[in-house]
Amino acid sequence: MTSTGRTPRERHPRAVELAQAAAAAAHDKLASDVVGLDVSGQLALTDVFVIASAPNERQVGAIVEAVEERLLQLGTKALRREGQREGRWVLLDFSDIVVHVMHSEDREFYALERLWKDCPPVVLPDGGAPGAGAPGAG
Image (tube, rainbow, N blue to C red; front, side):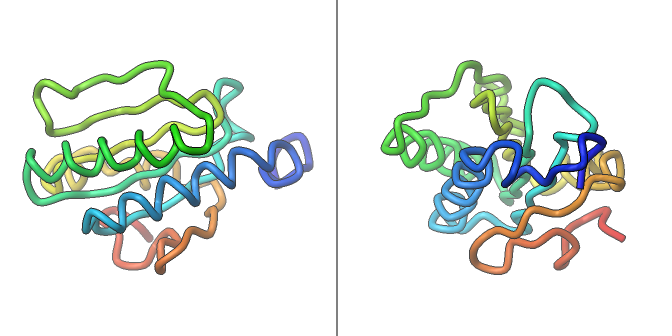
């Protein structure tokens, strides 16, 4: 539930659909610790964060490309992309969802799950529920 008393599925079912597609694409490129967080009660700009890790910059880039391609197939294009050049933490803003693809070291350092610990999980495919071995969870 959010401060509005609704889950993201009730508030915006498209956000959950996109988050699940993004997670599946990330898993296809061997992303680790893929989690979804319902931030709709905390942020007015987006409903769901998807966070994924990769062990190196090259894999971060491959995951980013796969997520963008999968969501484009669903008719959604990223409005903004940040961090692509460095390849350590790439943020993809799709409006309804924001995808964070992070180098594993940066993910541990910034610990987004701890920052957003009050946000409920969004169940994702392939065991991508928050807390399942994710850095900073718990």
